[in-house]
Image (tube, one colour):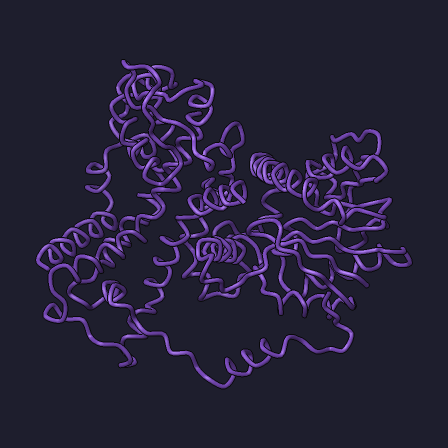
Length: 501
């Protein structure tokens, strides 16, 4: 238990903070990053610009549709003409393409379930690496660092052979990270995980092609889609049980999470478009890149866009099913002594339903915006209530905030927490239960840290929020008037945080 009453925080953290304030961290260029300097003759910046241009990323949203028609390429499905026809009438992409090919020509010379969920999230958000690199180049950051004279200039003579090609491959991998995201999205849209599961044994390529809802002309391309997904760890290949059966595809832990549920809300074009506006956002005073792209906040957009609202509810429900199973099995003590609970911004109530079913004595209320809960009906010890968490939260023994506070900036979080504190006022054993990310620089679990950082970037792009470390959480609780909190790492990427008045 961490006591906030004395106003002191972790001494090591304060020491680190003082160090940060007194020393300017100098960012040096890794040798591969020299490939993104604009004036470097070896630069692949033109390639990055063309590959991640909105014109060329749009077709990735049409891959599953392309498998169902006879268009030669997804580019034609998206734009109604071939890439070459488009390039002949659009000077910007045409110049970018020519520049990128010239650039490449120069280079030619020289907890199982939670782990599986983290694996899925990592691949869903692979595109963040690509788009972050694009933003950095558009802002000219590599050149600014290079021009400070703090890194070694890369001329063609400084690196040779394998070093050059390895550095180029590093840049290429980040430029094309989004291909993992979009390939996985296509597989889920085509229902491949469900088809393999229902087959009941390793499914050969021919068997998969025979049952896929695709156009006959696209049959030869299924192998290439499956090859990248096997490489990414979403499917595996095993020999069949019979002597005549060849090698077939099977699900892995990660792809089992993709059966029936579709966690790809964040790859909808509405939510990927803002990534093309990040560098512009850095140069204006608009709250988020989403606002820059769509001229309104995501919440305002969702309230008038049924598709987006439905996507978010389905995505949160999918995640809540996993979280509820872990909480019920491993965190029952958290709910001991409680008679009532309010799930704030609980959406359609997936988590609250599971808790109400498991803890029959617990009166559960799902509290969300009126348009979210308007058509939902409660039963037994579960009910729905519409309202605004910034104005008032219904009273209860416990207030539950699952993945809510990371959507909001510090000032907004303090307002929400103060309403939570008021809602449990005078309740014996009253507390706020938070399920959210606590960012740690964990070199041992580098993959989990990477996913946490992906989510932090996502919060920056879509909302005004962020992912917080332990000290930042502590400061929020103190500012909202709480005295104690306890952090328990039982939910993989996220933590269970109990906060007491």
